[in-house]
Image: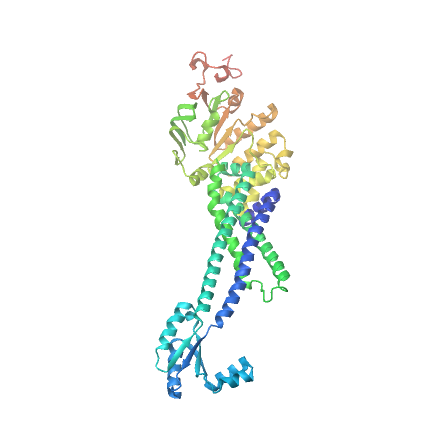
Length: 285
Length: 244
């Protein structure tokens, strides 16, 4: 019986190639648009993650803090906030020397004014502005700590940028999903109307909605699968063309690509299964 | 098996059937006779639930009318075999595929049974040699025989035929009527809608005469017909009856 439905779907595709190809073309356009945005989102996310990985908190220590106190502080930080690296006054000066590079300027500074510090790499769940701000205030209250710095403004901007990108991704994803559903709906309507006589005859012979609808559903899912694969191909071509100019531009990882194709097919299946009964009601006797 | 109780059907302002009541039992043959637009097709469409009565009720087997759901309507139609005047064959598939479609729709048979059942039905109507032909490659008579094969392939308890000979010349019409009669004699109830008294003659059975949407059961004897009854409603005299 299943083979029969697939044969019916293939027969319909062959009989109404114009409608099928128009649907594939429309869906490929909508899915390519969605895919390009997905590609941009993926690369933006990767870039933001790389920047996020560099988020660190610098905890400046008081000069009088002894080794035991520093060790106790590092243990506390490790327990509640994340891993830390100790930077002694000498190391801090050495780094400063490398950054400034001008011996005359360094001579003008005279003695090393830099305090020892801890560079704290916060846990992933604490890498946002609100959490970092709270952590900074808590750590600042420890007696061994002179002050805490984490580039609050930069972190806040990064978070805003990330949230905006996420919202835009959801909005564009929603618009494209709606476009896809509309294309599937109109294609199904055209297909059913083009085969109105067949649907009527089947209904008169006692075919239930499931029997009549199944070939249409298979056809819609198959068209969407082809469209999604074509869209993926177009996106790959675009990425290959732009990669030499935009350094680091990567294609979607395999799980994303699979999810893109499967998501489109699932959407088409849901849309066609839900809407066909409604469409058939307008045609069948 | 089939019962109409005070059924009235209106299409907008036009009255198609007016307070029609009748019933038929298993294995019976009923010929619904009437002029064009008398309401024959409406009556048959009410049996198949392709349309709903404006008032009254239609009972077919265990299906009591009113508004059946789409699922129940489909189930009901699977218990009937229907032959249309315009055949209603699918033009893009062969005679075999047209008949096999009905077997698949019935959902009662395994895939392995579809081919033998279909071939048997085509053999019954004498179309086994034309099984690969498209409807457009068949004569009108052959198309109607194909439609009959499709109607009988699931061995329905009731066979409905709406003007089964309407589009056929006399020889093909005779073949089709003989076929319907044979199927009826094998046990299927038969309801035939027709404008032609000769069809009713050929099939015998009970006559229901429809006139302007009103039904009356025709008596076998012309004397019982009301004065002024149309000629086509009168029972033709059988050969030899005059001498008796």
